[in-house]
Image (cartoon, rainbow, N blue to C red; front, side, top):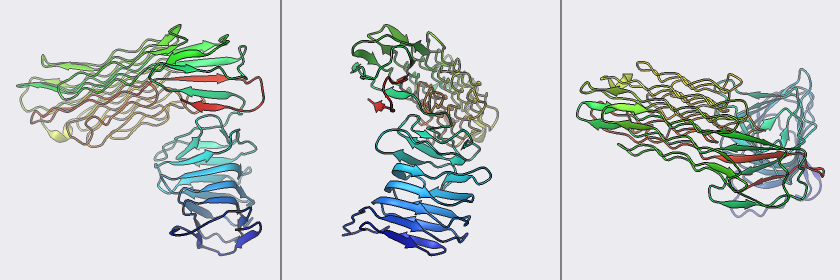
Length: 483
């Protein structure tokens, strides 16, 4: 493309179309592609998954929508518009940028959204460092990468979590001043102390593994839905004085029980060869007595996880039973919340799972009622819990299932990551069997359901644990690593 400016003055439709790149040799050079029209018509940039230098969204006074298709890479995306406008990304794609110079102003907000409301796309920052000088954005359905405060979008911006927008976050409206390290190895591993480590300003967050939900049980007319797995414990360490490499291990996810089998406990997260720990949540259980019990709460030195919800039980022939919701993981803002109780019935359409518990400081998952799954518990900001058959978001619990899978929401309470919400309890179909998993990190999985014909279903896995290290570097700049 050379070093010049490529001006596209069309007023609508597909302005750049390289969606098909068979036998194409493409060199981005140092060119700047400018979309110059002031028209209000929608425009499309079909990048074909290629790497570009700079794209400028021009046409200063044109209020319009620009849609990117394909997973493209840019050295820079900029906007010279002075009015509100929308930038749309195709759901499921990743757009990678080194520099981002798109910002709004008061009364002229720039909206970033998915082509399909509620389905995520990813904005990835290449080249390290953090993005600043951005404000007045309305961000919907976006996942920011890396998992840190790389995407600082300004105090006047909004991360939209209103349904159906899933509020995937990984963005922050707080100033980016910290280094973030996320450790996720569930095998014993070593973390090498970085050269800019600061003994006087650091916080280390330990989250255990979430417990797995139990499968359902049957013996004649005695039936039980599986209990949901328990949420993990949380431990916070302040200003650790470290001088050498640290041995650590993150708690593994508890496994959902197979049909007629109990879930397993989540693993313990260990820091500094076991000097500090955060316990895993217990596995859900059920018996042919009949009985159903949610997994126990994982213990942490700072906060505990939430107890899993019990599945429905019955001694009436032809009754189907749903599982209990998983417990939320303890986290930065408090104890994890408990999962809700499942509901049983002789009518298939009335069988409903309990809601998953919200993450640390959140609310409990709701108990199911006839034909309606329990509502997932909210996070500590009173948002994120899923309605019946709806997955949780931003640390909220998944709603209990009647017909569709419902997972717990991944946490965002620690710079866009954190403790997860519990998975919703499943009902009697294969649609949700073993798929109602807990959210990252540390949430319990939902319990399995049972059909009116006596077919048992599996429970769902919990979520693994993690260690999140936040520190103020002695040197300037941000750092992020994942292991």
